[in-house]
Image (cartoon, rainbow, N blue to C red):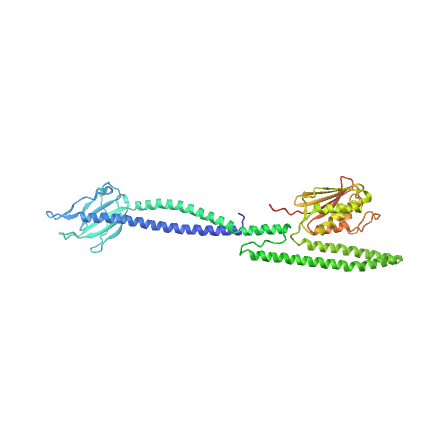
Amino acid sequence: MKRNTLALRLLILSSVWVVATLVVVGVLLMLLFRSHVERRFDDFLFDQLKGNIAASDISTKSGVLEMTWTPSNLRFHRPLSGWYWQILENGKLAARSRSLWQHSLAVTDPGVGTGLQHQALTGPAGMPLRGLVENVTLPDSTASFTFVVAGPVSNIDQDVHEFSKMLLITLTALGVGLVGAVFFQIRIGLRPLSRLQQALAETRLGKTGRLPESFPGEVQPVVSELNALLDHNAALLERARTQTANLAHALKNPLTVLTNEARAMEGEQGSLMGEQLKNMTHSVHRYLSRARAAGANRFVGIRTPVGAIAEDLRFSMDHLYKGKALTIHLIGLEEIYFHGDVQDLEEMLGNVIDNACKWAKKEVQIRGERAGDKWRVIVEDDGPGIPEGQEAVVIQRGRRLDEAIPGSGLGLDIVFDIAMLYGGSLYLDRSTLGGVRANLEWPAVDELL
């Protein structure tokens, strides 16, 4: 999972919440379990204490304390077992369990009438004990008897420790399961955003014109706004194209009339006016092409197959240059796409192929290939070629190396401008066929997997 993502933030927040909740629950369960163990421990001590009181009697002959029976629990018979009982008469030891051996427990006199008391005691060898103490007055006796029963605190700690280990394993497994469930819940819950990303990519690649209207209610408003934005951009582009076409038609007729008038004029003035009108016509054509390309470059959702356009252009060039009987080869253009307006692609390829056919002797080769992150269309001819060092000059506006060949000299310059607007380029070098090799490139947008 990548950093700085919504899914990672949700997962971290949920994981922290799960861990904090499980820690609190674990602590509470351990406290409740310890309280339960202590209560069961105290119940056992209480039963033993009451049994000792019930077994105590005052001898009618000697007037001293006698035990009518001995507690049978073996823990109180095993020496230094940690389980002890003793009976004090007016603060002096009157009886004790065999487990105490020669020792006695130091207790605090609870006083007469105070009832049952819990006391923290210390047994032999410094063992911490939890004890119950009660003052009792037996029949036929005026003495105060203190009954004490105690057990090792380590028994409670051991039970709590064992429970804590099992609880830790259980809560850890539960936490891992909950975090895993949260992870899958986030992945499933955020899946519409992945679908939205894929739909946007398909729109950008030209596979669809709009986003599908089948998203959950939380995402659908965003989808609707994106579709509205796409529709708005399409409307703006169409309006710009219409105005560009209107401007081209509005300028075409006046410039044609002025050009014809300039041709009819004799002398230096007519030549000067004709040259300037020619420059104006070229400039209008050049900048209108650039304006159209700039608008198309900002419109997503267009994908034009290069192979089909190249096939149409080959058909046109065969008719245009049928007197030269040229052979035009198309190689590897089927899988190449131009992500832009079809008119811009036709203008770029048309100018480059027309230039190659114009100079070719017998053969023109048009080849497509992938060059890193760009598509490249290579147009080669077997013409005379370009003198070394003049390749960049040919692309400049209005520059022609041979004035005898018809043309304005603006074709390759316009191709270069349009390619630059799409993030591509055009450069010329020497062809293996003997003529010029024109390399036309533009960014390749990878297909969705």
